[in-house]
Length: 166
Image (tube, rainbow, N blue to C red; front, side, top):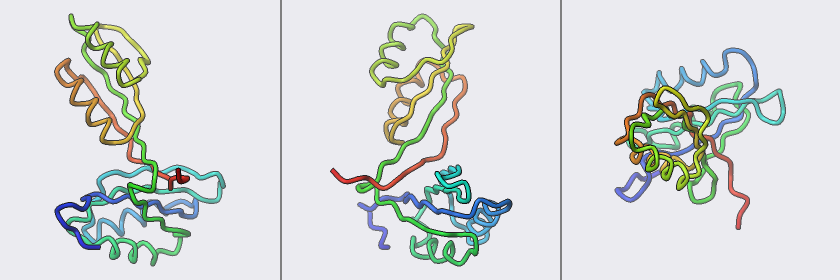
């Protein structure tokens, strides 16, 4: 894959693997040995308990995507590899964030409403909220919350599935 200035730096790969101990360690070890940079990683069982899906967002600026896929395909516990085109897939990420309320509670709640985030807990002058969206939208919300004072934040890795079409 040619990486031109207009191409995305990050690419999403979903790998279906046998749900066995040590598989994630072997897959992660492959990335480590080859010097591939993983931007995000999410792992969970699939609808079939025999399999898990590992969703990687990889940095393809330094390593060609086809090399990543070829190396994954050599692993014995890998069942299927899907390269997910951002224009033909649905990607989501979850963010949990604790924000200082301060004297600007009304403004903060307007942002929460604008983004349709969920307030999970409130106390000690702080609000704990969650929000699931495309990673770029989470980046936007994070930027809007920073002036209030982010106390703590955790984002999951990206999860993705192919789009169903129109």
